[in-house]
Image (cartoon, rainbow, N blue to C red; front, side):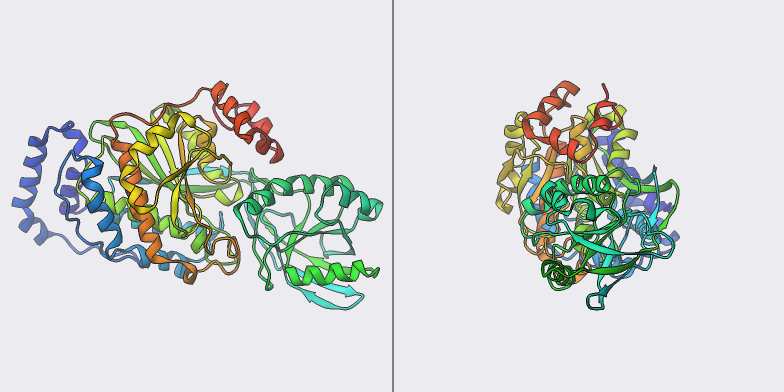
Length: 539
């Protein structure tokens, strides 16, 4: 906690909602008092040691005002976002100094502490962490794959996240090619798949559709493999040039049923060519993963309180965790830095929106949006008062608009409210829906969601990969995205009317049918959780 008098005075100013709406007289007296006593206060405080990787943000130029329209404040917010700021150094420290932040790792814990300090320096009112528990902790052991016959050579491979370990001594077995892992591939393999390691072919990842399909089909492939009695699954990497990445095919934090590894594309294709020529391939596979029981993790939460309706709020979020082969710069460190800098921009503007804005950095996203699911459960009593969830999770590509997840009822209002960011290229508001990031559980709870639509740029080739590092980030574009995020959150929070109300369970079910989300939930094995009320709006 920051305990000096100057900070206390600043906190009094930031908590202006306590002075009551546009009633500026009492607010002015506090400001005047602060400035009168500033020389005394400044003579008493000791300098605050900055967090490593943090630089003093530029002082805001906006007047201290309790009420100013979004159209009036947007230009100054945009300029504040584009000027020199702590953003680049924040991201550099998060990625280079802390590194990959796999949920449950020491690096993830360090990132939580760092994020608290970074948000504190951004100037928001209240910052705290909220704990939640997932079924199992996990980390990779020393994965080793070697082809023994017909030609000995080492294979570059890495474990799928939350995969079980191989048996003591590893697995020595033949490899069976099951094509793309569909019914035809397993039917062709027949009884030979039992006790074998199956090789699943993939296409090179290029588009968002490729990525969505990857997650949709994987669950069914695992089920076919389990039914066939395989010993393990080798997934051909969807990236060329020996690039490895980590996914998980489970979405509830449970350990998978079958050992699985991603194999470098060129090595997998070499194995496939041996098999296609009629030669048998035998490998030795060791993957001594480390698995623990239930594990406790934390989300980081901060807030700027609204002036008129502080109990109603907009949530601006991104996920703090990442996979650990790279340093999680595109997925999703750049948007962690974005959320923190958006908080700085709004705070530095000196204006207060009608409603509150909560800034949330979720953990456990890569394991199935576990942190946002936990947050939605913990805050269900408040969700009727939640205006919208605005989520950024697609690297540094230009933001072209937002996906509204099928909520036609919000479309006109969103277009009108977000007119101030139209000049930044935010023009396309789509109704496509997917459960691919931290907006998912808010959608299932009936809350309006805005998921940033971004151009692909270099996101796909580096997705979850060892190459996802700081040098891939376009800092200039992230600053533009900060401007979009800050103005979007402020506009939604300050609008005279909400963009839409929370849907009933019946309305959510109709939305799922209309958008096909119901099929996605079933393919991912989460339909029973919806039916039981464990996930989504309760019956």
